[in-house]
Amino acid sequence: MKSVVPSFAHRLMAWPRPLFRSALDLLYPPRCAACVVRLPSPAAADFCPACEAILEPVAASACQICSEPFPGLLPHGFTCPNCADQTFAFDCAISSWHSSGPLREAIHRFKYGRHLHLRLPLARKLFDTLSDPRLTQPGPPAHHMEEPDAPPAESPETIPDWILVPVPLHPRRLRERRFNQSAELARTLSKLSGLPCQDLLRRTRYTTAQAALSRKERLKNLAGAFLPVARKGAPIPSHILLIDDVFTTGSTAHECATALKKAGARRIIVLTVARG
Image (cartoon, rainbow, N blue to C red):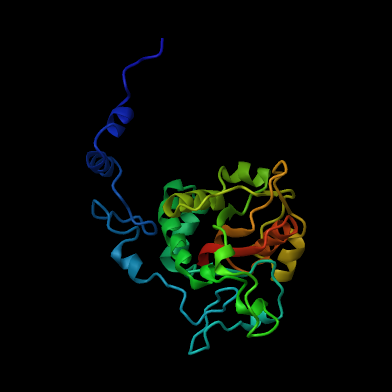
């Protein structure tokens, strides 16, 4: 017969929130997301002061399309040489932080070490991208327009709410990794921001690891690997924020955006925790 006596965990969760938080910190003290040093309880930040001090924000002088940072005083909204000759299916990719040092370590611990609790501190870094002014522009960024002074494609009053869409994993990769890091980040960001999250893509083809491939090889490796999820007649949302952990060459985001655009999406902006 199943016991009706509440477990310790259930009794703990029934405590008032401050007491519950204190008890949880006692059992599982907060630690730095990167170096795992113990943080003060309650923790005021997700990283210890030493790691927090060397996190690298993406500077204002970054490419308007891919967020690749460039040193020096460059005009606002410039396009980098890497993107000048590229045609992406997404409007732009926004990252607020470099994939280096402590943040890179935290992402690797989360993604490859299966430290799922790190989805919250990483989603908080992802949340920073939501303050980017490109999200409030009424149409695609300037580089998509044929003429610099062309009118926007739509008026601000017609812009619907953004929908968060995670980059999917192939079922085989999902079995190997046991979770989809992009989906975990998207769902956590949804809770932090209030923006709805929907799984609108599926990965239909298992591909080799991308890390050692060039951009051209990555695009060939990923061609046709994504399809929209069947929605029983429901249209694909017009404004989509594609969520991933790191933006590198943009090949994965491009293939995902291509599938979504063919299904009817109008604007797609990529949000990632970090810029690789």
